[in-house]
Amino acid sequence: MKLNELRDNPGATKKAKRVGRGPGSGTGKTAGRGIKGQKSRSGVAIAGYEGGQMPLYMRLPKRGFNKPNRKKFAVVNLGLIQKFIDAKKLDAKAEITEDTLLEAGIIRRKLDGVRILAKGDISAKLKLSVTGASKSAIEAVEKAGGSLTVATPAAE
Figure 1 (cartoon, helix red, strand yellow):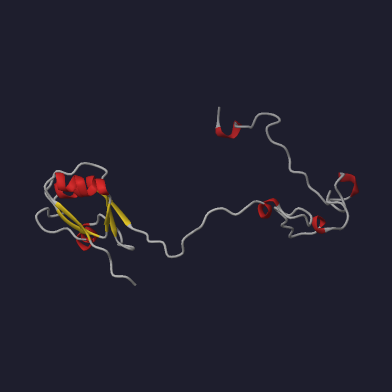
Figure 2 (cartoon, one colour):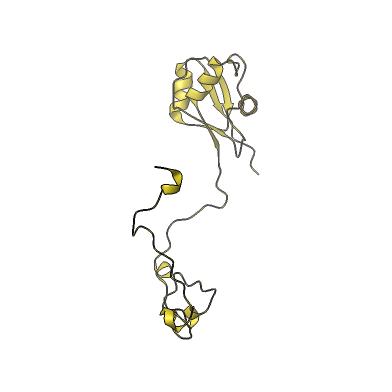
């Protein structure tokens, strides 16, 4: 078989119906769109329109609420901090703050602060100072012999 012998299976492809090509074609003049009305014209976008009836998406009740002043924290897992200490990218003896985490490349940006979560194991004795931390993360750091202080940011 050669490239020029490749063909689709018979009946797999159909020719596109050419509309508006005279009365002999069966779809001449109005091209199967009927006479007059919005849908016979070009540029029609009526998805979700129900002919004046209240559309379904407006009939359904609204749910939930998005808090406009919600705080968004940069999340760091303890296992990741341990990984960076093992790779000598973080100094375990010095105090680890949000700025040191940023410099080491653990987080991209501080957002509204940094929050420590307890995923992964920590074995290094650390002195952490961050905006937030889960209870289990605080316990895990103290169990390893370190300390984790949660400093609330200045109210804006």
